[in-house]
Image (tube, rainbow, N blue to C red):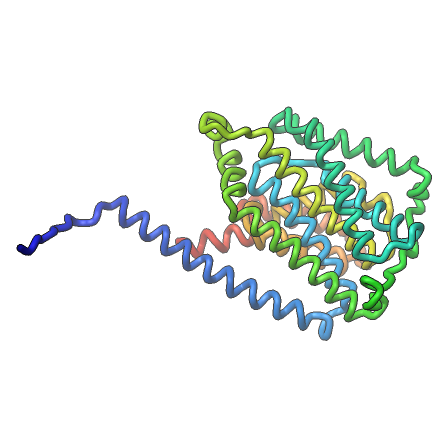
Length: 331
């Protein structure tokens, strides 16, 4: 006996779901191709571009990527992330110069210190929402700023200068340009991959659910406060990784790293590139650092130029550069 099965016409919602799935697969393929091209370009970059400039861009790109984990994927606007970036910079500089630690250990100490600071700040801040959360992080960040201003080991406004690059694990001389460049590139790729993995894990999906509708996430039984705190600590730790690496590159830690203006810059980088996108913050950081470097000797203040571009971005490209590109590809 042969049984015949008849299937009815596909429903519109099924077609829409299939089309959305296909678009997502296409975007994933495009993202993979872009990532491969970017890695190849970064490997070849020191032969065509001043290595210190590219390393500075990589450090701030990692900083913006870490901040995007909190703002873009969790929906928490922090105005105090400079505390973790600059705090890690001071910890790393002190460990490398005064204690004589090798660079990787000093950077990891800075990242761990930033994570511990993030745990304390996050524990206090996540009890508030919206603008109150932002103001609490700003206030605590300013407290950290004045602590570093007065602390003896930071040397006040002079900062910690002439930080030695040293030998990586006692084997690789980081005073050679190519050696330190590929060391910084490796740290950037590890940090970037960590954020990508967090975002695309079940934990990251919960963070995005909290961003979209926190009350619904609570009704589903998720301990929202714990997820927020975990995201805050992860973001602070990776920001500290970026800050510690920047000190080894530029060999100086100053109050500029921990000032509130640095928190504003990372917000600008994230919004300009596209928050909630994996590549957006890196693009935004590249543009901002490039403009600062290019217009540093011009008669027009850099802050004015960056401010005008930010206003134009908010008015014309509210999703940021990468966000608008993704929207156009989806259409």
